[in-house]
Length: 153
Image (tube, rainbow, N blue to C red; front, top):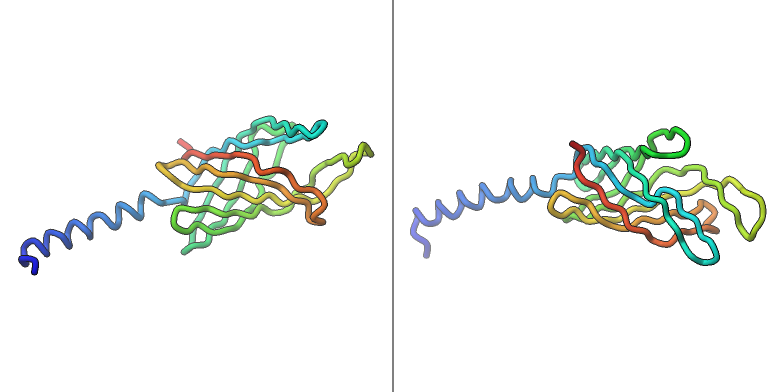
């Protein structure tokens, strides 16, 4: 049996540790992401031009939502919304559909709706993971590509 003083000290240490551990996993806030912005597939080789985005995340329980705003796009972009979950340091997001231009089978460009899926893990203040996009008709799907985000200053 623990001495009452040792028990009180242990409980105090635990009480101080728990809020620090919860704070270490805080996802709410503004992040700067690096991601493959423009992806092309030439003769089976996927090529990506890297971009940056400002990501704003809000959390309610395990649910997260926010915006993704590309910063170095060829034409001015509007923030895109997303929703998802953040549980045990793991982040899963689904972006709102956006229009994309694709050329299938050597034909003309066509405009399709794409949804981007993100997964990642928060560790030491950095989110790292993979992302891919899929057309709403399930006919076009990109390979998973790496993305990361750091807290914005």
